[in-house]
Image (cartoon, rainbow over all chains, first blue to last red):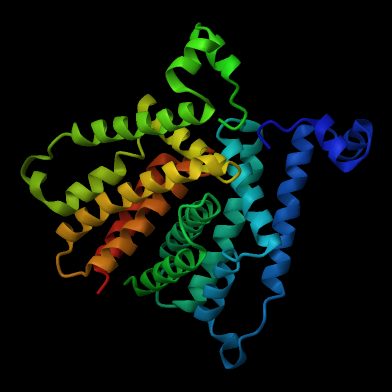
Length: 171
Length: 171
């Protein structure tokens, strides 16, 4: 994404650059639409997850499942995580990307905080928000370690489950 | 780093490309030396940290300080974190980088696990290793959120302190 050139994208897609500009307006439009695409797809694989038998209404299992869905070796999760990591890393150098990314991060944190509220009803809303920020930031950190070959996937999943356990023990 | 061209690097440094090749052999050599440079510098600012009065031998304070040193708005920490994030993100696409990065990650995890061992002597070595992996992966996640404008620095520091607290409470 860093060196994204519209001409290369058009060549890869086998269309003209003017068709790309017609649909996406500019480079920022392409990146904006990429973020929408991966967010929609993550929402889809999250919504389509299998109910887990008797536990399908247990909020803790639900929280674990939703977070673990992002650490799976399937083409769509790999592609989603890679694209998310690229948007994140690119935003360090490209302020144009930051607002969309901060919004998407906020939406994600908010969803996880709600699940934490159900799994741990004795906690306070600010404590759930902080736990959700930590769990999602940890997931981003684990995900890029996995994709960059520093951490086996199964171990990343184990570490994430440990973090959920610790967050749910907080007083 | 993704689009690093030796010719641009030479122009930026005001030297010839042959001098760059003489010192670094190839592109992989430049990236290898970059990782060494940021690791040495992080080791230096970690070693030079101020003792904190009476608490200077308290292992928990020491652990907190060492991790918080990576979340500071100073030019050298910003540059180090940006370069580390770039190496991490580049390794997703460039297998050549992975071995060095996995080694540097392992060294870092090992150092933090040792500090956890001193701060929490009742825990087991595998538990300290897992906590160290989580804390360092969380720190990477928080750092890139900060650098990409999704998280204010003070809040990132607060979340990290909360995670240290939670890891040290583990049974």
